Amino acid sequence: MDKIAKLNYAQAVILQKELCQKVILKPPPNFSPQLIAGADVSYSRKDSKIYAALVVLNLPDLTLLETKTIIGETTFPYIPGLLSFREAPLLIKAFRQLQIKPHVILVDGQGIAHPRRIGLASHLGVCLNISTIGCAKSRLIGSYQPVPPSKGSYSLLKEGEEVIGFVLRTKKGVKPIFVSPGHLMDFDTAYKILLLCLKGYRLPEPTRLAHIEANRVRAKFSSPPGLV
DNA sequence: GCGACAG
DNA sequence: ATCTTGTCGC
Image (cartoon, rainbow, N blue to C red; front, side, top):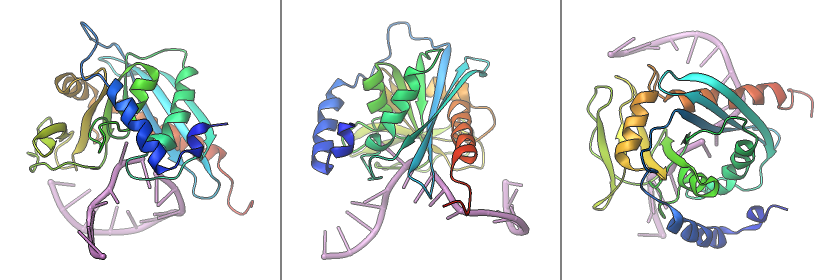
């Protein structure tokens, strides 16, 4: 059914090389998003279920407007660099069920800060034809200098001389996050949007809420202990 | 050959 | 990512 589930490593990489050519590192004309979404996926240790969550918030007040959670089955293993094949299918399905379509999505994962410049956020953006920003909690590739301690400070993430993202301090005293443009997005716009989404926590509000919602459905629907 | 390695 | 309570530090 799902062709993606049948892809092997080499085939998946070939598909990424095709998709990466469709990535646009520039936002739409006069881009000023009022609706922003957060996307995240959680897993169950026992069964092979995965839970995707999308939340839509209003900008700049960050009011929650809609929450969409959906349950799926794992069809691809986790392989660094190929996360999209594991998480994108369910997130795409969830997106199609949204009543309110956002102007941009903050994704829990990398954008172009990826070996082939096509991380989960970029992959989703191309598939859905929407602006996306990669917002990861840790590094996949690239090197960077220490990030200053104050909120909003950052240091460029590069691979060789190429800038692929930035490491952002979202709050004083906490580990910085890794931000990179996904699709229909540039560094400057990504930075400005990120700052608008900070609400006193390490993670920007859209991604933070999506994470909470993904965990909530898992707690509610995953197999209860002792009921094998 | 040896590490690194989003979630 | 997931399994998990209390506990240390800003």
